[in-house]
Amino acid sequence: MAHIEEPNAELVRGNWFAMDEKYIGAFDGIVSFQTLIAFEDYKKPIAALAALKPRFIALTSLFYEGRINFYTRIEDFERNDEGWGEDGNRYYNIYAFPLVQKYLAGLGYGDFRCKRCDIDLDLPKPATPRMQTYTIPTADGTRMQVSGAMLLPWYFIYAERTD
Image 1 (spheres, rainbow, N blue to C red):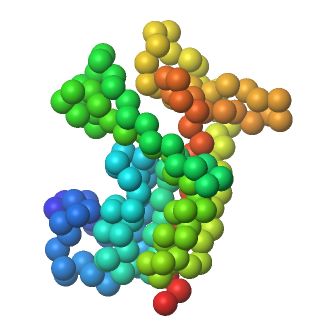
Image 2: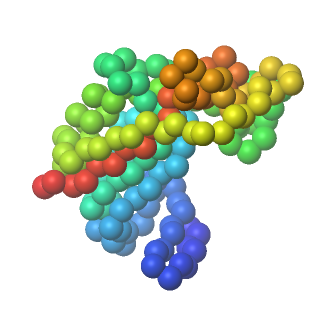
């Protein structure tokens, strides 16, 4: 477990599924940045965070506004660097907002808010085909994020405990 001290925050890094019981009720909030997509499913990791009973859970991840989950496993035969596993495999899942919202509400996090993460940067397409984010301008002036052959609908979600 790594601790980083900041004036108005304590950052704790650890295994979501093996957190010490001393952390139950110890956090105002838990923030997860681009992590949920890498799990096989969203339920077990979200339940692990909710079990710590923070006042809020904030996530950035790939989400779809309809009632469809997209389970994608990337097998990248060119890389085996950190975060990709020894065999170059990784999940890149897109989860359905309505289902995640309902699941969080069932765990006591009924105050749910979300915002699409649009970036205002032009990111160039990589010279060789690989998993690396780049942007494509759209007709409405926004930028669609793409990596490899995948569209990346990034969102910020915030769920506050209501029980």
